[in-house]
Length: 283
Length: 308
Image 1 (cartoon, each protein chain N blue to C red):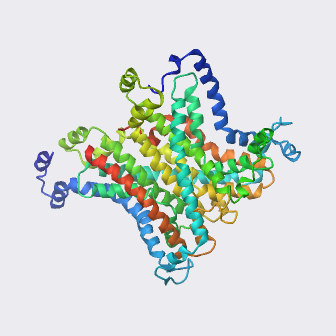
Image 2: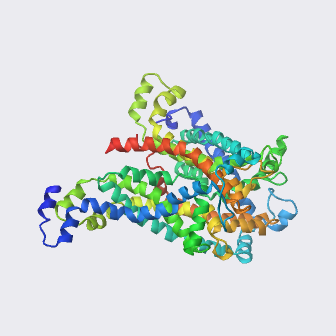
Image 3: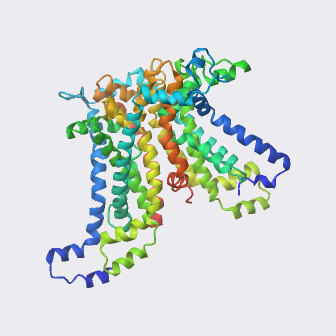
C-alpha cells in the first residue's frame, strides 16, 4: 500500500493526520458550505449585512418554500426528469446493441466504427451546434423535449457504446460459442446470455448518464426556447435574474438543482465510480 | 463454430438459408445500425456541415453566400478571437494542475481510518454538481463586498479585487472554479488506480531502501500510468470545452477579457447571427481538439488491438 498506512507511523503523525483530515475537508468544501449557509439565511439578516455571522434565525424551510412558491422551479425540475429518463433508456438500448455488435463479431472496419463513436464523444459541442439546431428545426422538434432527448440519446450513445463494447468483450466468449453450437439464434444469445451479464455495466452507465444529462446546460440552451420546457440548469439562469437581490433564495434554488444528482451519487456510489473510472485500473 | 453452422444450414427456404449462412456477417450490422444511424445524423454529419458553413456567410435564415477563406482571414485580425485563444491556453495550462492536485489528494486520502469512505465521497462530490451551480457558488464566494473569501481574508489584512469584474482576474477566477470539480474527478481516478497498485512491488522497493518522493516517482507513478492517461485526457478535453462556467460567471466579460473560443463561437451565432464566422471559430477549436483526440485514439486502439 502506498503511502505507508498511517497506523504504522508514529503516534504524533497519526494525530496530525486525524486533525488534518477534517480541516482539509472543510477548506475543500468551503464554497459549498458558503452556499448552504446562505440558503438558510433570512432576508432580514442579509439586508442588515449579517452575511456570515451567527444568523438571527434559520430560514431553510421558508427559503425553499419561497423558491417553490415564487418561481417555476417545480416545472424546471419536472422538465429535467422528462428529458433525462428517456435519454438514458434510449442511449442504453442503442449502445447495448451496438456494443454487442462490436464485441461479439469480427468484421472489417469494426475498429473504425468504434473509433468514430469514441472520437465523436470528445468533439467540442460548438462544432455540432448550428447544424443540430437546424436539424431539429427541419424535423419540427426544435423547442420540444424531443429535440434535446434525441440529441442526448445520439451523443451519449458514443460513450455508452465504447463502455458496453469493452464490458462485453471482457465476458467469457465461450458462453456465446456454446450457445451458437446449440443452435441458439443471435438475438436470443443477446437477450438471454449477454443482457443478464451486462447488468452491472448498465447500472453504472445509467447513474453516470443521469448526472451528465441532468447537469447539461448547453443543449437545452440551444434547442429550447419556451420557459415552460426549460430543465433546471437553464431555469437556474432565470432564477439568477429573478433573485438578483435575494441571494438566499438563489442559493436555495442552486441547492435544489444540485440535489438530485448528488443524491443519486451517494445512493449509487459504487456503480457511479465503477463507470467513471473504467480503465483507470487497467495496466 | 463454422462447422456446426453449415451442418444446421440444410434448410429448404432460400432466404432463410442465405441469412443463416451469413448471419455472423449480417447480425453485427443489424445490431450496430440504429446506434450508428443516430450518431451519424446528430454528431458526424453536423461536424462536416459545420466545416462547410465556415466557408460561407449566413444569418441562420435566407441564402448562404460562399466567401471562401474570408471568415478565417477575418479571425486573424479579430482581437477578441486572439484573447479567447490565449484564454483557452491558460485554461489548458492551469487545468493540468487538476491531475497533480488530484494525485496528492488521493495520496492523502489513501488510508484506512475511521470515516475515510465518507471523506472520500465528500471530496469527490463537487464533480457531481452541475457546472452552472459551481459557477454560481464561486461567483458568490468571490463577491468582494460580502463573499466568504473576502470576509475570511479581511482579518488577515488581505484585500481582494472584484475577481469576476476585473479584466486581469476574471479568467483565473473562472479557471479556479473549474479546477474544483476537475480535481475531484482526477482524485477519484487516482484513488482507483492506487487500489490496484501491486503491494509486493512497493514492499520490495521499500526493502531496497526506496521511500517518500523517490518511491512515488520511480515505483508508484509508473503503475498509475493508466489513471494518469485518463486524467490527462478528460482534463484537456474539459479545458477546451469550457463553456458553462464562462456563460454563467461572466458571459465572457468584462470587455471579453474572460472569453474562450467555445463561448465566443456561441456569442457570434446566437447574438450576432454570424453562422459562418461562428463555424470558423468552431472549426479552429475542433482542429485543436483533434490533436488530443487522435493521440487518445491511437493509444487506446493500439491497446485494444493488442488485447484481442
